Image (cartoon, rainbow, N blue to C red; front, side, top):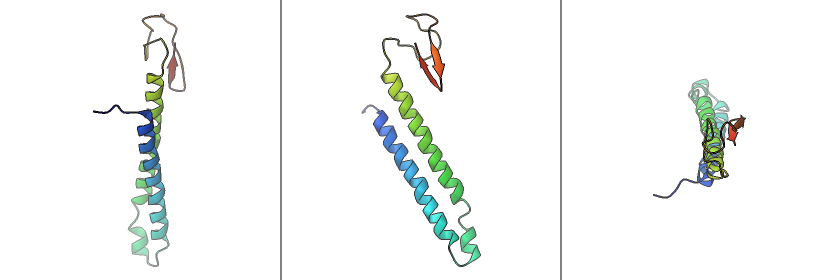
Length: 98
């Protein structure tokens, strides 16, 4: 099975964001409809577009995490106390480094 790459996750993220934008377009078209029942039929689309964008955001964050884990230097520790360097880990904005 091929290895998952940050680029693959970023591609999925872009597709999710694009899907959110496409859903927004459909919602706009429904709101432009002449009759109210047709307009109301799309009430779920606003949430669906938001979910798609959220999925894209989460995929992008995962791509960043994967890139950081794979690109880490000599310290093999992801969190806690570095087994090689002791209590030298720092973190900020969801990132940890030795």
